[in-house]
Length: 172
Image (tube, rainbow, N blue to C red; front, side, top):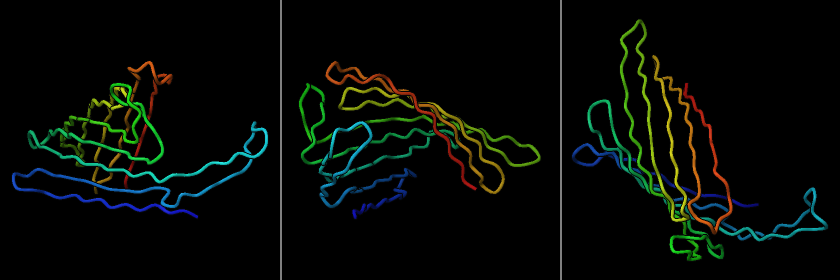
């Protein structure tokens, strides 16, 4: 068995800035697992190493209906190496992101708020991310979101192609 642990904080500081931060740890025990997988020849063994994550950001209101959200995300995994800026092999990877969001209130029979966001980010692994999406808030705070993210590598060290992610969420 294994476990994960995390904590998250969201607060408002003088000036109305909303700050958030979190720490989490996955695979707290360094388990040794083995087993057969389809296509493997025989038994495969792996050691699971702990993963430590840190997230911090701020929501800065530009107007009553627009804001920007800068954030940083870091991952530390002992005994695992990531290619970083300068082609260094280090156990830490980091993403820096900024998102702009605009909301628009529509006065109809039901209270509705529509909005969109766009974002840009970069990673120490020489990855660039672009995101965009829309949201709708209906009566009684039912929130629907739909987004699209695209990322691609600028490094010749990592031979991964671009990724396209479609995400959606709703809260009732």
